[in-house]
Image 1 (tube, rainbow, N blue to C red):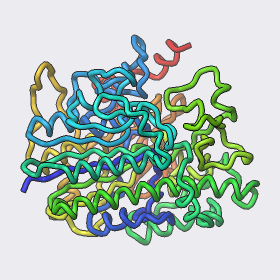
Image 2: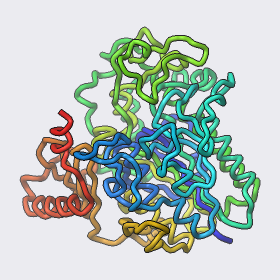
Image 3: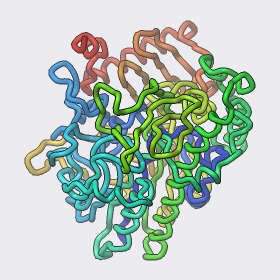
Length: 521
């Protein structure tokens, strides 16, 4: 039988936030996937939501797709912020080969949120679409909710509406209604656990007390579980607590702090339940065996915060931010102990201390290309694919490899031409040899750039820098937690990797961060 493809992407979730990667958060359905599939220990995203989505769906680096940062149009000095016509999405390629193509969830690959555009999902290969065109937002009242090309904002008025559930329900409907005469591609893009911290009360209650030990003890426990489960090398040390974060015992307002993480965990619990519903639907329709299912996150845990204010007091209301609740109450945006997160009238994030836990054992966060910003859990489940159940694979791969892998698994060729367009060739390689334990090619280069934060990796060596700061060199074989900079000891390696990075940046259209910042002033 032909191979179905199910791609599940979550939003702003850290490396160690699910059970198969050391978390205390209960994720039984992801546990089931990992037990019957393969976990990757060194898979990488691109540190931010829109660029990661662009790279994941096109097999290119994000700068080649027109989305180098987010979906704002920064021309003529920056990126257009919308998928260009030089890239093909996975849905376009598979659809041309006879696949049914479905999407449920967050798009965030177009700057036009309300009027149909050539970069909307329905015009980039998806036969059916339900979800939000813009980025994150309220889980109870998400803006830009669309079915096909028609706004269905009225669907949020149901008293029990919760966006994570709506995404899961639509994904299940696609599976149950699918005509089995042809294979399908289903892209399920959750906003969970991206801020704001919104979750049903019963899910929050179920997480009560889980984080009372605080981030210091939980980081230690997660690191130990990652080692004992074979995901991490015991030689790699746990990075120190973020220097901007106080020790848990010295942190005030423990009740508020723990509820922040309890709501975050509740969001993941609800997402995991949705994954379970998708698995059950595949099993009930007899399609699980021949379905290649992949699960990953678009960037590392997020340390972003907000200045306290009611949203109706803001001089400008962003597309993702509600001016009020559905029943007209004011929405308070901000992280202060006086505002307990969870309900629709709040709009909060979980803060640096908990993001530091999410990214255990690494340092840094979303936006940066140190390991904490780009390392993601990646689970692949494919019963008919000849994979070793429960295995962990350690070869490094990154987002452009996903489309190359899908094409090899399905036997679909990437077209050199497409009606009215001349697509750029793919940048990735297939991960099937890695998944099956045969190993990946030696000497391959991986590259990253986001907002001037840059990195290149070849084999054991990773060269990385924050924008405006010096390069750092790390030996990934002995120091993946990036604790010991070897630039001074390895000048030849540094010179070679710098030259390789600069050549890649020119070829892929990376716009220097200084150019964008200077034009924006």
